[in-house]
Length: 267
Ligand code: PEP
Image (cartoon, rainbow, N blue to C red):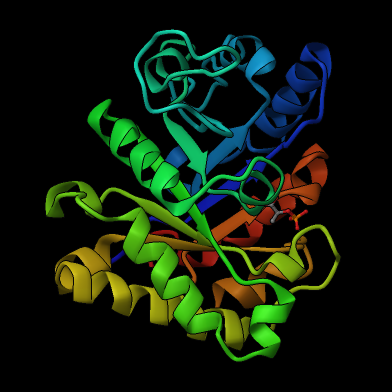
């Protein structure tokens, strides 16, 4: 089966509203000459305070895309609908602001905000229950890799993140394999090794559900993806796209990455 590739930009805690709008419009301009069908699914994840301003730029660019060429994601959410949870944002609220996807379980949230697999599982369920798509991040530390426990660690992260999620919902999820030692370090994981781990993740999904779901789930690679690395990464059998941090903060490099992923569009 063919999986639609995805390139998602994680803007992390960068960009004031005016800067976020400028970046979004720069990406929109850079993709103007391409129709939705000619591109991977393109997603950007601004900070919460910029989401509405960015969504307001999602207008028709002249190619008939009806403003749907670039989707907007949140970088996090809380699983409860509303209530006394100071500082949190619910899935419904992110959806109301125009988000179609939500990144969860990013290693920075696990590391700095003590997010656990159980919390990520609750978030994934809340996202799917609201009809949005979770981008579930997983990945090993350098220490885990050196101790040879990469596969066991990631298997456990995926099993816990997907616990109790139905077969129907499971096929909608996106997983991002992000080796922590490759995030923001300039060191990319060897493309063959990234593909091996991603195939392993697909097998975990197959064991939890079935072949159909495993074939449908998109699995991205993340970790210092650059315009120079994307073509080789996309040439690998199981890499369905990329979650991009640093290189998504400039329109020209992000656009180059999006265009570099076209090899798998309608492949
Ligand atoms: C990320 O934040 O998910 C990421 C992969 O960052 P970078 O591309 O900067 O390594």
